[in-house]
Image (cartoon, rainbow, N blue to C red; front, top):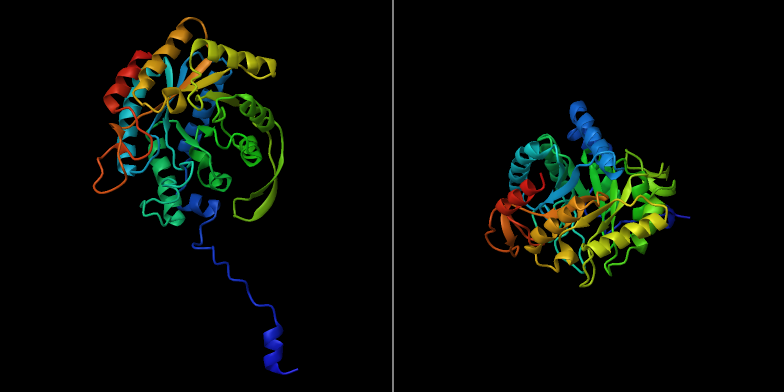
Length: 348
């Protein structure tokens, strides 16, 4: 056999044509952008405060409020500064948590969020997205705010979860086994949204699943594939968000959901999303929905433990093209800051 024959018969390295970027491991990104010890303690305190509300040990209302998605870090930080100042005046009655959503679930296609495409070119840049997303969370947390996000990609969670106090699993992913396993490993409370059809069953199943320990395929802090055993997450709850033209924030719907939770041996604590199908895609309806939920609480239903509101500096939404209006959403329409501040003050 000639040398040339020997060479041609040796296995050739496989080129992965789909691999566009090398990314840091979670450990490398956290080393680049570390969470200081004092900030870590703050996040743990915020998580425990959320848990106390979910368990009925703290009668304050949990309010998750902020932009539909963070596309402009400067505007998000300004919003956070305003929210932190207002939250300090309302802390006896409300625990205000800022939405810092970095991933955007899409029904078909579209911008997937700051994490994936920070420049919104449509080409994606996860390497920059990871850095900018973590830096934004650090800056917001340093304002003293608890932070909320939606866990969409289980792989991305390890890069950011140490800065998050509450996590949502969305209506499209609540039924996913991967997301249930992920939730069972997360160190913070998790809210499962009802299905896109408005039904509760898949969310209740998700809560039971996430409370249990699982073996799952994951990655360690160094980015290596690993078999993981999750501890189970006892701090999950239902988020009512309506579905397919059906709302579920009214008293009868909330009471029925709580009864279904009890019948399944689950804590009857519910959060209600004032946006999405509950608002019938009309963002201004969030104000009336929030007031109705406050009425139900004042009438004695204290197991309505939280509400979600989509809000930004400027009311409404805009198309992501040309010169953008500063502080206005490019995804779902949001309440403007003035209306948000008035609404939050009514909760005190």
